Amino acid sequence: MAWTNFDRSPTEDEIGFVYLIVNETKDRYYIGKKSFWSTVTRPPLKGQTKKRVVTQESDWQKYYGSNKELLADRKAGDVMTRHIIRICYSKAEVSYHEAKTILRMDALLDERFYNGWLDYTGRSNMLRGLQPDSLPAMHPLNMANCGDEVVLR
Picture 1 (cartoon, one colour):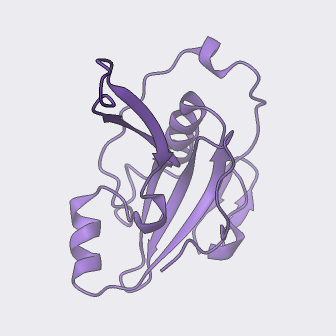
Picture 2 (cartoon, helix red, strand yellow):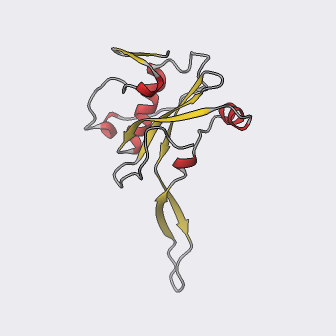
């Protein structure tokens, strides 16, 4: 199944995204981040000594998260929908918005979320140029945006 709201190839300046996976069968959720691009080290060309580093599109189109419980539920046949909730233009921005979304939705405290931990280290100088904003509206999930809070249906 494709991402519900992103049906194109990423541009070169789009580094990654924050996503929400919804287990429709069990009414559970997972917030995560994924990079559009990955680097691969290849052996040197014939006659050369320096290894080559190549940037290529990652497996983002087939990605279903890293949480073992979520992946087990998917393997068991649970129906999942995947939503990209924010496109980001730097690795720091991707990490920041993932952490912000997890904390704003109380994903670590709510039993309906698969998220069990959050690891974020960030520096303000890495986020220069970002504007403060509210959590993006996640209308595909019938969520009500209540100021700084997002309430699940």
